[in-house]
Amino acid sequence: MADKKLREFSYSPGYSDMRGAYHREFLKKNEKGEWVFVSEDCESINDPTIITTYGVSLEAVTEFEKYLKDKDITSLKDRKDSDLFATDYSPWEYRIIYDDEADGRIRWDSNRISQYKDYSDQDIELLKELNQRFRDLRGEQISQEIHKSRR
Image 1 (spheres, rainbow, N blue to C red):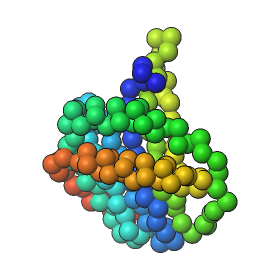
Image 2: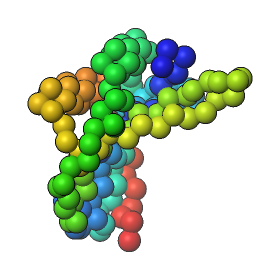
Image 3: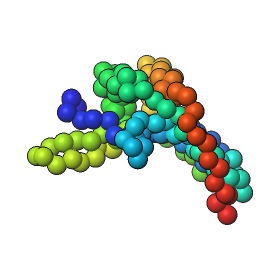
Image 4: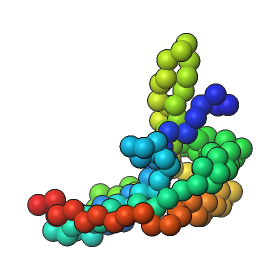
């Protein structure tokens, strides 16, 4: 894991999506190679999508990446599947993507942590902390765009 570099981290909260709602937050690099926090929100298929971009300091990203590795967050993906499932609901999920350099080539290592797993009480506390640390990355708002509805 030490040679892997964070490429992107994303979070989508659990929500009912019968009306076509969409919510997702990303930590990623923009076209200039700078880290940004991007929030995409749409309340229904008829509503516009609001994309808000925030600055993130390199120091904050470095600390967050260290936290992910120190707490072995990606191991949460290996929890046993639960028996729960809802058809009219989008479950929460985290996606952590690393650049994995091996043999001089860069590969993506994608890790998905999702709601329908059997998490221990300790795991739940770790996920709460993860969510707070992720949200705390948001710096000053850089921009906000409004995209027409998806219809």
